[in-house]
Image (cartoon, rainbow, N blue to C red; front, side, top):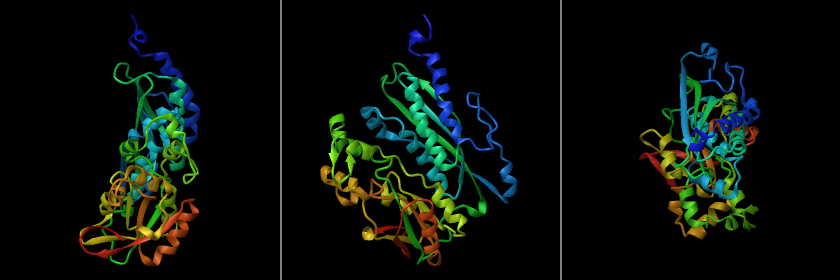
Length: 341
């Protein structure tokens, strides 16, 4: 009897690490002091000497049941981008710069090529965010998970000078809300998606004219990473007063999180185009509009509030980063919350 006969292949684990290395290399930053394969990742903090009050910000998240689509379509090279995005977008939302990322993959059976494919997406997400992938763990769980399935989660650490934290504290009536476009459903609400659409390969490979692609391709489109967009706004000299990453809970849960007491966000639903996938989802599932906005991002992945005098400069900075931006609303005095009109 040995470990392999019990379901854990140590040699497959070694091969997975070897296959990952080529992807991880592209995420390296000069502050990384260790090589992949060690017991921990070391990251120099020399940069804090340039800050008045260096502050660490962190984020951790997973991909959720969007993974089920990756299993069905046997496509694993973008799901890692989602995992990174869910973590680093939260850090950017606080004004932080993501520094490094660690991933955790739990699988029923370690298939090195599949693990490397997953990590290639993680590495791509890190490259988009400017974060180093300095470590991780691949855990083989025979008997606990089906051999063909896995779970993916991650953890990111970022840095910001305390004076640059985005808290919403100085938000005032008249401030303008800008919405940065999403790439679709992102990584939230897939338990409902899986109730609306048949989770069968044939259904996912069905082409929809309005989507411009298959249902599966559209749903697996990775989450946008907004780190560069927010960095561009800061470099343009614009102060982001408040920021909200539109994830699970949609507009109704996430927009109020960026507001102080006595401030209300007024969002114009007709101020930007809602992607076709949401119209299709609502129609097929007979989902009421209020529930759609309470579950999904509805085409806006990040909302930022700026002073009216900074609107054009902020929009230009966001556009220069490659993102699409809309002026979607305004801050008013009133009961803390959001009104969609």
